[in-house]
Length: 451
View 1 (cartoon, helix red, strand yellow):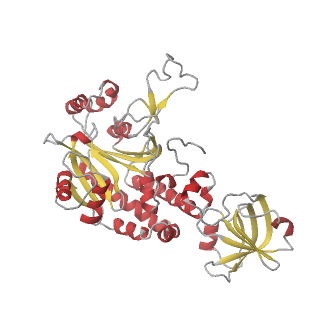
View 2 (cartoon, one colour):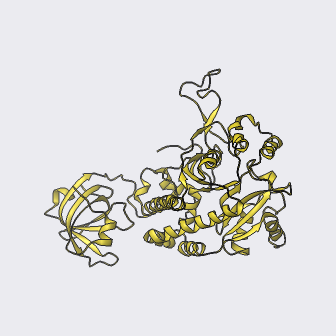
View 3 (cartoon, helix red, strand yellow):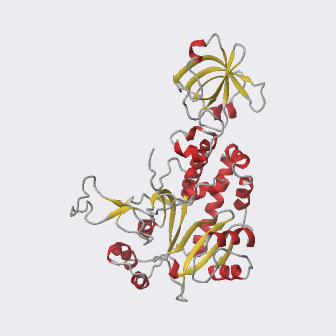
């Protein structure tokens, strides 16, 4: 039987319409001869209340409690209660899946720590329903942004034999039952789960022009902080015949588009986050969506920090990476908005970044935003074969496994640039959620890979 989504009922329906709702009971209250059932179907934050004659629906109501799934058909009537437009005068009630008294979500408020222990059920709460709707809207906005600009989506491999960042934090991949000492590698050599789709995206960029990949990536970093996941998603565009300035412009436009889409499409959920999770969440997005991003070189940024008089935990020094406290100080105190820092020392950046003529810095950029610090990292890629080979030697990486990557510099090389956005970091920033484990449906972290 066709069902009506609660979101559509509240947006488009008129009093007197006959509707069918299927969802889960948030609360069940009994009055004098009447039972009130708050139903949520996940389509929006709001519930809709079904009002049922207790005697007429006695058998069905005995099977419905908090957490149970059910279907209700009835007529929409104007609700006398505050905060709701309609309620359903129930004609038919069909219990579907019962929920016994030990259903874990009986209370209205639970700690996030408790909800991580029941990640398979937490999407039924207001907070995590809102997180997942915002996450979905942001994912769709990613694809719209690149499609409208002529980028082609490509699917880069999850299993790879190269470590993009050179940090050695890859998960190994082997065939089940083939891990005995001396057993041959399934792929002929050690393989792992990708830490980035960038290198492969660069290959396709050298044929198709502007491309992007949006997929899962993995880091075997034994970290249990609120900022790290072992499995997360990355958005990684690559542009042929582009330099760092064009890369920075794309990153700025991308964030403005992403935040603007959330504000336009997720007003109800964002109002929830603004009230219950992070007061000011909406204003922060509005400010960035309309801001002109400041730009400063790394050398200038270090000078600003050094002269600030601020007592940092880590003293700023040229040649050292900017810490989160430095990034936030620049975005929040100095520029009062987003800022793009460029031209970092080559010794603290990856081998593939374009070297500047000064011999000390590379054409790298980080986009910093208030409250978080870095949200995007990118660079112009090194397109000179000799310089790229020299950089691999200088940092002690064997060039042989990168023969295919070097070939793109050997045959028809061209300037190109791109960036990476950690999708969960972006969702965390938008929603104001404090722990990154709470913005992905099923977090994968050290010693935890259940459900």
